[in-house]
Amino acid sequence: MAQNGGVSSQKSGRGAFLLFEGVDRCGKTTQSQRLVEYLKGKGVAAELWRFPDRYTAIGRMIDSYLSGETEADDAAVHLLFSANRWEKREAMLAALHAGHTLVVDRYAYSGAAFTAAKKVPGLDLEWCKAPDKGLPAPDAVIYLSMSPEAAALRGGYGKERYEKEEMQKEVSRQFALLADDTWHTVDAAQSVKAVESQVQEIAEGAVASCSKGPPLRLLWTEGSTV
Image (cartoon, rainbow, N blue to C red; front, side, top):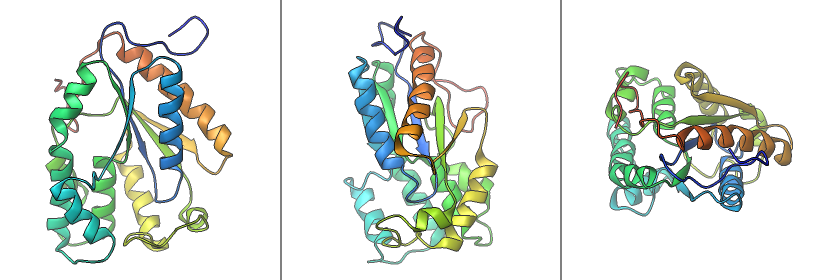
């Protein structure tokens, strides 16, 4: 960490994997964009990633499903989301090991939480986690906590398939079951500036730690690193 209390660019080690999670419309897009600009201003090589990546072949299929243009089996859709993350795995690893910090908007936690929230027989949380085991694990999960009722009042709510209040309530319950010691909960009902300040503090700690070169953990695979 720099002497002025900010973060400095990595001289060694690796980049940090910083992940934003939360219910729909809780502010992930705004905060992830702001964090990337903040980190760049501090000399950190930061990149913004989003999942699903709707620009790959698999991503275009997911986009069609989320927008309601097509229908698909729930298990098949879950595996599509997972495949979308796996097809970016090597690029993620290369960027992180090259010293680039990745600020990611949604990841496997969302995939597991949203499918499990559907309560389809056989698609419980453990089943939902299984396809993503072995992906790069985040160094810090920034969970933007907001009630589905509050999120529903935000602009654009309801345009996509899962933006229904009851669904979002169940997604929140599933997120709580997924939380581990890498999670940092931030009250997203605060002002944008207040949230931003807390996010920056979390990010600075993770970037400083990762610059020392700790191995990158693998998701939901205890003790495994890459």
